Length: 116
Length: 115
Image 1 (tube, rainbow over the protein chains, first blue to last red):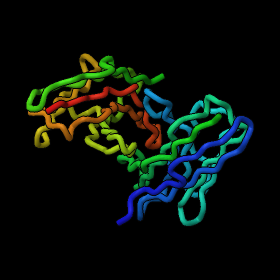
Image 2 (image 1 turned 135 degrees about the vertical axis):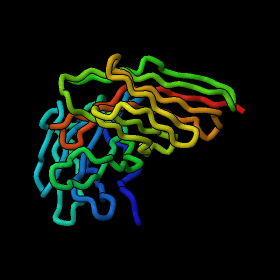
Image 3 (image 1 turned 90 degrees about the vertical axis):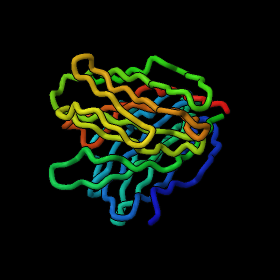
Image 4 (image 1 turned 180 degrees about the horizontal axis):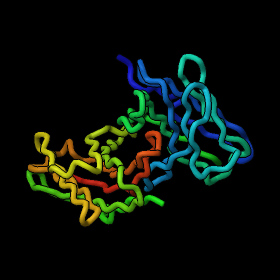
């Protein structure tokens, strides 16, 4: 049973460029969340996708956008990269069961993005 | 707004020592969930425990135990007889009932267990 997989593992970009990160959720999961973890900090919630729609969003600018596909996989896009976007980007999947939204999240190993 | 504070940035212990990681949270909700995650050097966050706000019973799982006290808004984590493999960053997190599984994390505590 594959867990959450993310690609690529590492990525180096320059300021102003655009980047796309990918995530495949754990088998059977239908919800994907993205988190940004700066060095020495805890992960911060970016947004969450369910039924191919953005359901919740954290305090991140519109440069951060996403998409969820019919197979539940997801992409995170960041436009006009800034030096401050350098971080570990973590994808987490979960399964909505009726009204129970707060199931435990399964995380991938992340994509380390470096912006030069 | 919800907030999680992990005041201990880094803790160093020698193998077999007991160690407690502190977590203090703030929320206006009466229904919420508290979590602990472990992050080894590989980067993946590993789920350890989830506790809802109505269950204040302490929990023990092997060498791990958790002490939840609503009166002090704390959810502390104790590792008994620590091992080198316990070395990692540990995060405490909070999810409110309306949060659709979105977590607010603390800054984490790095635990270094030396042989």
